[in-house]
Amino acid sequence: MTELLPLPLVILGAPVLAFCLVALTPLRKNGLLAAQVVILLSTLSLIAACVAFFDQLGNPDLRESWTMRWMPMGGAQAEIGWLIDGTSAPMLVVVGLVALCVQVYSVGYLNHEPPHAIGRYFAWQALFVFSMQSLVLAPNLLQLFMGWELVGLCSYLLIGFWWRKPEAAKASVKAFWVTKTADGGLLLGLIVLFSLSGSFGWETGTLSTTELNLITILLLIGVMGKSAQMPLHIWLPDAMQGPTPVSALLHAATMVAAGIFLIVRAWPLFEAAPFTLDVMLWVGAITAFLGACFALVQDDIKKMLAFSTCSQLGYMLAALGAGGMAAGYFHLTTHAFFKALLFLGAGSIIHAMGTNSMKAMGGLFWSMPLTFLLFTVGSLALAGIFPFAGFYSKDMVLESLHHSHNTIPLGLLLAGVALTATYVGRSLFLVFAGRCRTPDAHPHEGPISMLAPMVVLAALTVGAGFMLFEPFYELLGQDASFHWTALGTGGLILSIGAIGFAYYTYRKGPITVFRPISELILSAPLDRAYETAWNRILLVGARGVAWVDRYIIDGAINAIGWVCTLMADRARKLQTGRADHYIGALVGGAVAIILYTVIAYSMWGGAQ
Image 1 (cartoon, rainbow, N blue to C red):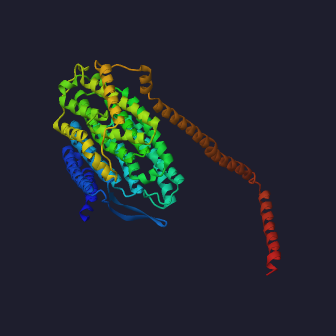
Image 2: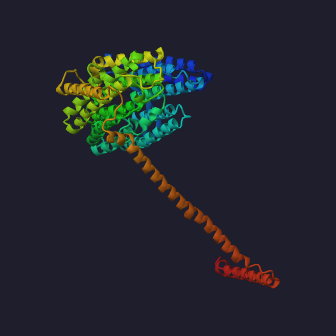
Image 3: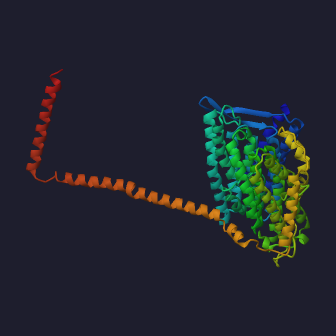
């Protein structure tokens, strides 16, 4: 199918062109024009991605790829190119669609920023789209790693967009270093994979189970950092210091999902590594449960959604660990739509109220009815309420654990279902019910540029579940049809009951439930533990460097000085100032030279 070959060039080339036009020309100083250029070219990239997706739907066995040799490595060759198949096609659309919605939304959200700042923002947005799409199109893990690192760079730049704020600057650096530390595991995994197989591909080849377990565990470390799995989740809540559209794009829908996509893309490696699957199952289940606990006590609406993202990524990882690759990937897709919708809804609320605190909100139903409707759609999908998209994908995640007979992890996920519905209900009632708790606030709906992308995401949140369920599984080469199960019904009842509990608890305003646990969570014990450990490491390292400096470097220099002083002191005694001493030394030297010459001649000259 030769007409498909140019599509990757359009998907990747359009955002690259947008970045170059905005970043490398005076266009960057014209904020609105820069935004229009980036949005136009992002639309072109999305159209190409949609064409590729529908081509795949028409022929699930279609596999279009192109590679060229890049770096010679001994007897092997590294390759670079692209691959469009049933795995990459859905993610191309998810990235392109969410990115375009966020870019349109940003025009209204950042309209108060200086033109040069808006130009810089949209330049980074275009670079991010290219980076993420190159990751998705990668035909091997080496190219995926390059896109992975570019995505991390864009995350650093966009989180720190308001770099004059110390909190934003600190958050961007924290996100960078936590994820880079985890990326060390991913890089080491690639090195081990290449050394054992001579390839960066995701085929198992002749690798043994032990080797696959080692490689995939190392890859999983990188995944845990990028997808904010415990205990490497600490960067994500702080990353909310960036603009809210950035949170919707990077830290809800696409960038944090890159880790899950890596596992899906390299599924042959992970599927053949039983130990790694067990680790994934437990890490995902624990993250899903604890992330929901943390979200339940947050007062900052963005941090609540950030911990919710940690939790939902845990559901995806747990499903993958249970062998439910399609279930985990489908939940990634639906989650991208409704979580992006929730973040954009939160941005609309913050834009109107001027605060992130849900305790300061309330009564917004009357002044922001459309935002209320759209935010409610996203919230019900997150809670797994029928017929929204989150219900279908969450149900498949639970079923995958049920069929694999993982009782305790399944119990953690069901507890997470109840907690998720509770914090969803809590946010709805605190934000929209009752009266506004900020008397001087004047909340209002945002401009059409902010509302229109939310409407698009809401439509996908409503329809993506039942419309994409069977086609999505067909793309992955699996047959599936949705049917009601006892587990799915039980999860739905659990969610509805939890929302009812939230209504009973929070309908009259903020209230602290389980105060000791809430205070413990809000004190961020893991962050403090990391900070304490890091400070101790720095202190020990500083003391070690000081010891080396004092006793090795300074000691060596002082020893050289002492030796020079000693030699000078001895040499000074040779100079007495008396003529008879100098004449004696001269005669003695002459005699010594003559004796040396005679002896040398008698030993070597005579022999010749």
